[in-house]
Length: 162
Image (tube, rainbow, N blue to C red; front, side):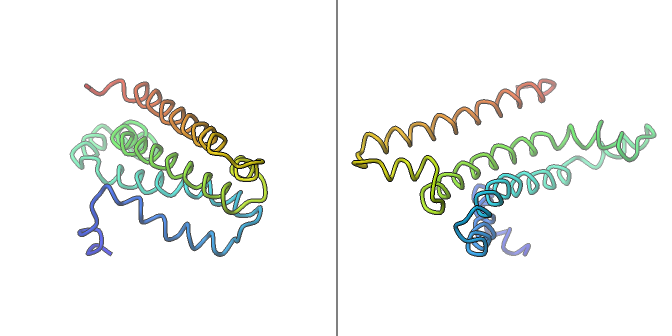
């Protein structure tokens, strides 16, 4: 697996989650189970990946300094590991939200009998204006969630210099 990671650029790391998502989609089919399981899975997978990556990226000297100040267990996580991993966690949240919106769009357009995508495709007549309005709505929702993550990032990482 490390050989694969050596050849895959970091920007394409999100593609690792497409294969399990496609397998889950094939396994769950196009019913209600897919609508309830795939969106949270698409959000949690990058979030968990980036969290683990962030905890591994914390400088061991910081962990050792925390231990020398008698921190262990939860206090060590709270005061040393979590602040060090927080930029990675927020990156995972941002990636997860992007993948969540892609999953929701795909599910609503192709795999569900109802929803905004079906409404847009099933309108009489399915004109370009209706489709563009639906895409604009998806874009606004996606940009809004990204803006919320940016505000959260600015608030949680206010201790970091810009």
